[in-house]
Image (tube, rainbow, N blue to C red; front, side):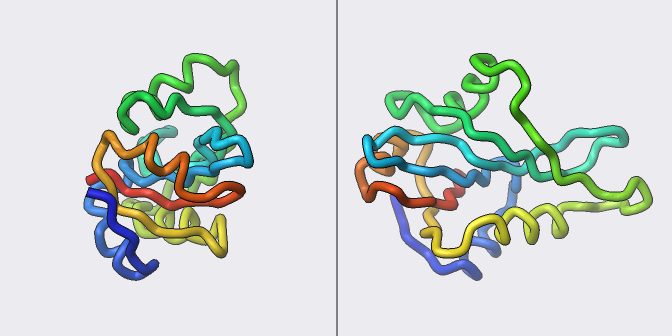
Length: 130
């Protein structure tokens, strides 16, 4: 399943924000992870993680987005929120979706990364893997 949706549909689909990713496909069809939403910090809460890590399009989305972090030393910046806020999921989702105007929004299966890498070059994609 690979479905283009509008921004509102994408946002409403984010049942598990940790499966939302901002990807970039360059002119050589290489695909990189630009940002995602994770539970982390102290105290643990949702935050936006920013990076530029190349992904292996032959692997499932969830595997390669976790695995790529082991290939880079550091390189992750965070958008974190006050400890006083109990649930930061809405803040993280809103900030995540503000990162890139002009991106396409996709809901896709775990195995669709190779298809995404050949859709269009020099393009950002918000993807959600339910």
